[in-house]
Amino acid sequence: MELVHHHKEYFKNDFLYKELIKDGDFKTIADIFTLLADTNRLKIFWFLCHSKECVLNISQVMNMTNPAVSHHLKILKDAGLIESYRDGKEVFYTVSNQEKSQALHSMIEKLMEITCPDFDSNHEKINLNSEYLEDQVNKIKEVHDYMKNNLSTRFTIEELAKKFAINATTLKTVFKDVYGTSIAAHIKEHRMEKAADLLIHTEKSINEISAEVGYESQSKFSGAFKDFFNLSPLEYRKSKTKF
Image (cartoon, rainbow, N blue to C red):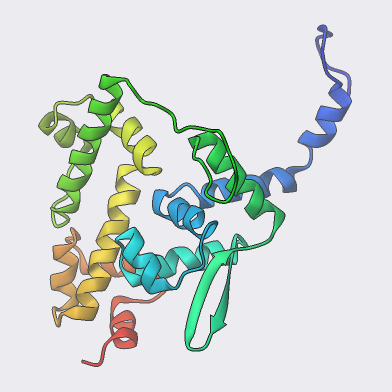
């Protein structure tokens, strides 16, 4: 390929061009990165790189509801990153033997400087001595816990920034760094988890539950819930309860 400007390249342009036009390959990688752009899903994947576990144990380790864990497991399995097998009445999940799964496992640990329990490594965890960074992370965790404990209330970025004395842009950026996704997407996941729990363990109406997890409109809540669980709230309740 002839470039407009003939600078002194230190690489072969033809080779790079041939690689760049492989849109399918790049899209596959981009899709995997998008799939793992969720902190909980990434943690589940990493956990299963070192373990074979059932949904109940994964839920306990992750401190998440069974439906939420099942949702993440389905996405990871559909992508071919994990696999499942049945032992008696129990279904276990673990990382798949596919090359992309092993490559992702290695990449995650290199980026995070984690000492993998399955390998003899001299890597040490990154030592974060910056008091400023630590303060910012702690503040973001306070914001997270505050929102999680008040799911019935909708907060704007500006309101949160003012309440916790933090710059709005810093709030959004550091939150995504800590939790792997935007504030809205992460809190929506908590709302869906709580809604699922209320549907299973209470007899509250759909309208009551939608208000309790921060939705003024029952129809918007039902739409969001179906997008998350592939079932309407009523269908989900019928499939999980005996009321």
